[in-house]
Length: 404
Image (cartoon, rainbow, N blue to C red; front, side, top):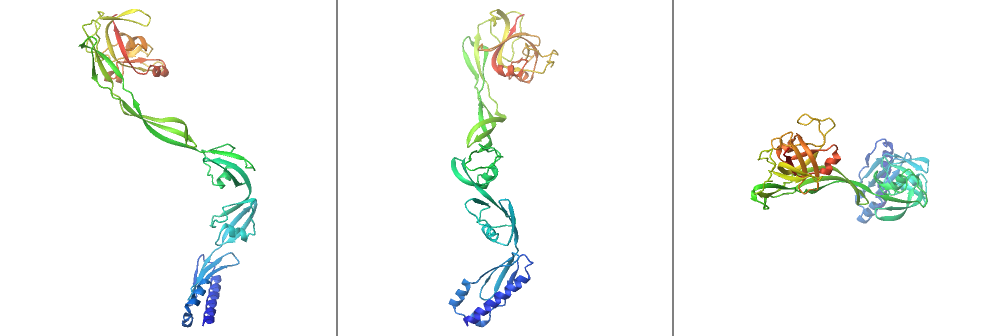
């Protein structure tokens, strides 16, 4: 009974092979032989298990197509796999191999190419072949690589530095910095250092310090002070493009600065009741008078009379040559912008910071602007250059309205 069953299995397998060979023009074909007879099913279990151990069928046809299947004992199923054209670049010599399935090692074996330690195969010999597989065999070059916190001796395929390092798995990015020119060819004993360079946009919150503004008040006794409004810091978002080399920040540049919360000035009233030199606040509630109400000493040591003083925030601005002011005259150093409802156009002024650290000097009210009209500043001092404006910045100032 066992001999008869084995003969039937061989007949089925042979028939399936012949049939499969006749239809190999299809890419994948399943071929099923006739079922076994009742007598073959009477084979004892041990014999059936032995048959299954030998049931794998693999057969390569002359054109490279491959028949792969299994004989279950009752039928034979075969798949026909069409051969792929695999190109092997063997150190400049091109060889073509037809193979349906397998690994790079199978291709090399079929091409009768032996690989020793002096050669490197890309992709690796364990890789399964695909329709896009192209195999390159190069002479091995031994180099030293320092990257990602490690130094290693590695074998790489001959060629330029970037291609060889990529083949060794270092994945060189366009931003990475190499100690050897990217176009150089590798050589035995070469030492190369890879610095990983990355760029990140990162946003931080920065505090905007509030200004302290002093205003004189004749409602308070001389020398007394009172906080009229508490100061409150503002906030701005700073977005920087930062450069990192091997994880360490080496440089940054601001790409955006956005104020998300404006600062609120701290306003302190200083009592002047009982003095003849009492000034006004930035609101300009008192009117000008030709009669002197006080004196100050200018930067040259001269004693100068003034009719009133306006205290508040002073800023700076510039304009292109020939730009006209609100009064029709060209902008010039010494011509300043004011709220004409507080300080009339044409008024002669002397301007200095309340702490005496910055002196603009003598000026004439000839211009105005939004910040002046809104009351966020009492004077905007004209400078010829932007750099001078930046140097002036923003200060609490006394604007003396002169008696003359």
